[in-house]
Image (cartoon, rainbow, N blue to C red):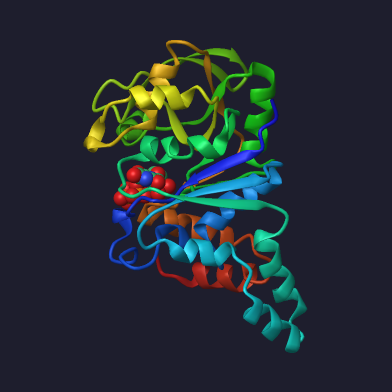
Length: 286
Ligand code: UTP
């Protein structure tokens, strides 16, 4: 069971970023100089995944264009001798295969995943929510694949969050079975009170194909949407599910504050920006 396929649900409306996301997909907002979705895609590629399945919706054609070859741009860069830039844009989509499927209505994350069933073809697969940017020495998904290879079950990425923030996440109740690894006993989507733990689900999943049967049985939950968390709860009735506390720094770039933090932190890591940007930040009268 080798994991080859990665699903990127990208059909949400991105309401937390209006008005910016009225005509531009949230996934195309730039972090320093790369669109959000490219970070997740590079993580997938660096984790050894080869087939990228992007779930798009209305107004999301910029995502397809971004990962497509742009002959005109490549010729122009070649003529102008801009070899570095040329290499950079060729790298974006090189060596991986893309498939796109369209979610006609944003009926929820679970629904977005359910429509990839025919493309997944009965194999375990990875899911990346592009909002979650994970800065890690070893790509977070690569770490998760190691856990999957041990447990041969679905693996959810989790992170400890303050209990006061648990209502913003899916939260697991788990039994620790190894350092950073929990067997999931239960999970609750956005608990209003008494979260079962401080372990929140972050936007990286490895799912077994039985999730599709579970999704078929899932009725609309919070916000009238088909919730992936509810489907995983159904999956738990017949299969073990594990949660893994990955090593790395995660930013919620789908939220304004998280997006700003990610921009500052990633910019400070860029050799060409680091010194001047640090000088500028130090000069701010905070
Ligand atoms: P979010 O809950 O962040 O929703 O979805 P959103 O629409 O992107 O953003 P806000 O909350 O309105 O600002 C989590 C992920 O699931 C995808 C989104 O694109 C995002 O990657 N999604 C959500 C879908 O693909 N389809 C849906 O129906 C809902």
